[in-house]
Image 1 (tube, rainbow, N blue to C red):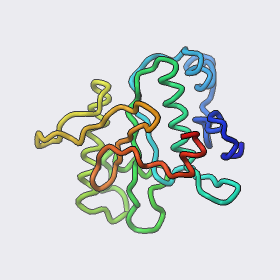
Image 2: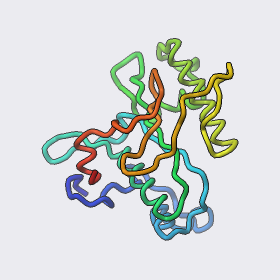
Image 3: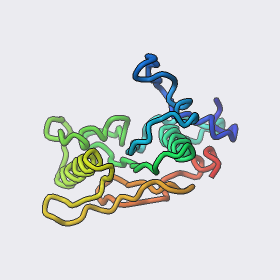
Image 4: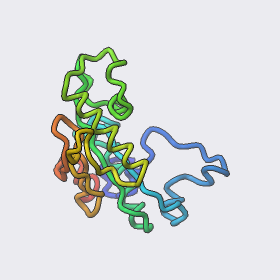
Length: 192
């Protein structure tokens, strides 16, 4: 579907994959479950990397469909009565080449496995990985990523994604909340 058609539903949460509807664990496509208010109201943490699933408009401008798919999911989730999710935007250019922050590059950080990778990570990468591991652990334990670092200092506050601007935890060298992470082309494509 062309990204400049102006319809929000063009940015399905399914970009390059679709989960398998098995009739038991997943009885229908996730969009229909969410839109029909049939999803379990669970806490949700969702995010993407900077260069995840990029398409182009007819005039060649990049549109970050991974982000827009997540925003569509968040809108539909909260419209169906779900609690506001925690949203992140992982923005770390991977050292060692010019691949940027590609799909799945956040996993080394999420699982704290930087030392197992060939890439020349440095101190702040390990600091970010530690913080991300703590955010994920806090979220798994109590539905809220906020808490303290290992030395007892508070982690940068992570607010839930509420409203049109959908604040995101910007996971980078200096993590913090941001609302200015969508490009003008993305904003137009998503109707903001």
